[in-house]
Length: 252
Image (tube, rainbow, N blue to C red; front, side, top):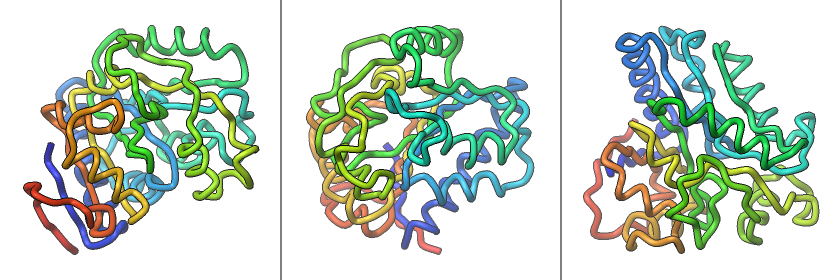
C-alpha cells in the first residue's frame, strides 16, 4: 500500500484527483473505455469536485458502478447515494454509462442484476473511502472477507449509522436506514487499482487500525494491505496516529 500524506483535505483531494484523472486517461487511451467504482459520503466531496474539474477526461467512455446504497431510501432524499452520484459525478461530468443501486425496489434482485453486469469484466479503478468504524463500502466489522458475491445486503451497525448523523445526512439515528446494498470486500479487491481518499481527524483511529494493525475483519479496510496497487491519500489529521509506517509526505 502506497501511503500519501498531505497538509489538509483540499491538498489531499487535489492530489488524489490528479492521480485518478491520469489513471482514467490511460485506461481510455489503452482500451477505449474505463470501468470505475465510485464512493460517496462527506469525505469524497472535494475529491469529486477536483476530479470533475480536470480537463482531458472523456467521461462518455467511462462506465461507473455504484459502491453502496441504503435499502428503502428514495432517490429524492438528500442522503441518497444515487442522488449524490447523479449530482456530483454522473450529470456533472457526463458519465457515459452507469449502474446505480436502486434500494427502493427489491434489493436482492438489484444486487444480483448489477452484480452480473459488474462481473462481466474487471474494474480499472475503484475510488473508496474508509469509515469511522473501519468499514470499506458498507462492510461494517466484522466484515465478510470470503464471499465472492459482488453485492451483499448488509445490516448497518450503530457506529456506521452514527457517522451518517455526524455528517448531517440525517437528523437522528432513528432516521438512518438499518440495511444497505454494499459491494463485497472481495469484489472491491478485484479492481486493478484502488484509490482511497480518507481525510479528517475523525478517521484517524480507523486509519491506524487499518494501516498499522493486522489484516482483520474487525478492521475491514485493513484488507487493502493485501492489494498490490492501492494508494491511500491521507491528510495530517487522518494520519496523526500512524506509527512505524513508511510514509511519503507531500504538502502543497
